[in-house]
Image 1 (cartoon, one colour):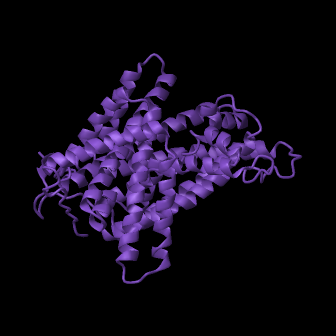
Image 2: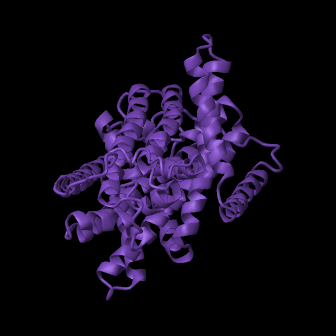
Image 3: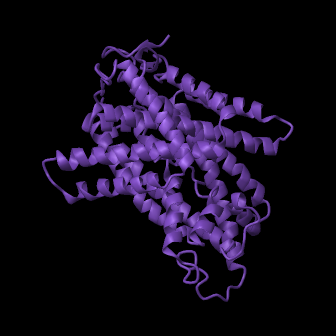
Length: 449
């Protein structure tokens, strides 16, 4: 039976993850195939300038990634943004940030379960969606119960499998592209800049969507208490993950744009990348579709890991019921109660929510957390720091402003649903503290081993 974390001798999370484990986790959560699902939307919005938008978005997200990594040096805690904001700015704001993160992290495994279940239903139409929803949510939960190293090994296997498919795509794409003559003198540079279709509004609109390709890298910071040398490795893993996903995504969409120029309409916007891959080699149409299923499976598995660690961090700090969420299984050294809770919510959510609304609400919570972490980094390193370095001034400030602009441009439905979620959280905090007269959060930051 799990026991509350109340003494120094109580079970703790186990430091078992290397730098490579952390990078693999981040890549799997974001997905090596991240831009494939939204390639058609990006191409239409950006008038073909998908590569440029992906690269600009990478630079934008690197500012926030640096803030996450720097704050993990100060607070190597599973609470992530919740702890950073609460400790550096204000406990109440930390609680609000944590509540927005709960929405983000709880929605991610739900929408991955929905997507995987719908895709599996396409592959096996005789098996109902309800079966697949329970199957995937249950499998995510079971694999998380096995322990963090088991999840790391699964991440490595899935990364290898997706890497093989992506490599095959690059090979057949290159064979197709160089096997056909191109009279256009700017054929190879057109995906970066097409003077006939370029427009700043189109590029900015495309970039605002492309930034969402990177959402998920923040989950690395929730593993701070299970990482070896977290003060070094969390920063490196977060930045390397953003760079790896950004470069890989840019090369993927560059090849796809050469295979299927923006001047040619897609048969279906939702499957635009699959259509481009099928043009290079017909069997890739099914292979890439299956790979996207695997990618979303990995993302759902990784998202549940992050959600459980966040709930544990908030439970240990008494922002959520400590007797349930703030406990560690003494055998496997995982927050078992939190994993089971996320699993139960995932099953229910897969039946009550649709994919589009879930994705929009996820962005609402993620961007609030991003803004909070950038402000926390700005406060700790520049406002309170002894040395007023420009490297402590510009990255977090630019990261905050970019995330604010993206948040303001979210859809009305997402804002309304997100505001309702935040209202529930504030009401719970008011009830818990008898009108905010009592202690809201009691942070507990474990020391490094």
